[in-house]
Image (cartoon, rainbow, N blue to C red; front, top):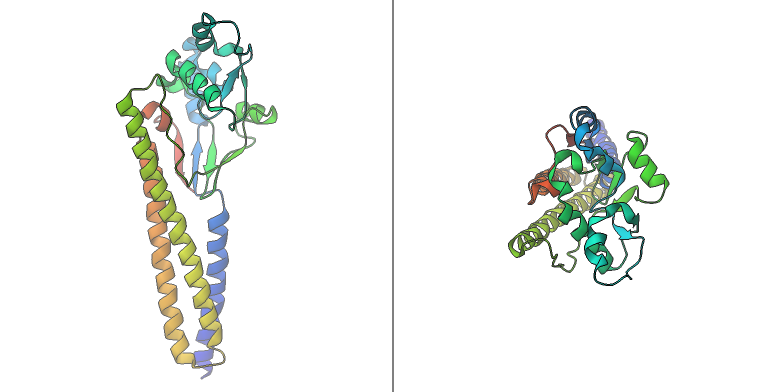
Length: 269
């Protein structure tokens, strides 16, 4: 009897500890990390002649910009506005779609994204709910955050936004981007759903294990054991789907927007 009570107490303590660790994992922002310091050193060393690294302090598609000269000036200024990124000033991501699209067209028209060193990459860490920049690792992103140009953390999307047709992107590529976005959202939802179910089942198992101190100890041990096994299966599924979502995101087209250069270190936290 004492041995069985010891097993029940051990099971209960382990389940509570596992529940605390699981909840911590759900809300942490260190599931996946990227380190771009080696990439920056390589670009500074071998790509200095192209001045690509100057774009690190000029936010691109994830840091929208707007023309500081205003929308006036007639139709003749449209081309010069698209070709003059130096005259742009930062705006926040909730601005009008027309302004965001105009920045997209300007950037894509210049073609600066197609070079590995022309795309600004910074060290990041992300979880189920947020993607954040590391502070104190890269002075460029620290400067952008301190000036209010970039947000340190952005929310991970779990809803499909209304697709927007971009002028400078072919229709078939636009459809591919939209389809990839839809599949990626499905993987993210599956990951979050199974993590939530794992936490709920683990909580139920802990409650059943605690009931074993007062009623039908042998039966509650079997039930709580099955619940713990289910929770482990759900966690395994969620880890697999999260790894699949990261791999899928990095393999999306076009690669010069979604992929990572070979000298960028990245891995799971």
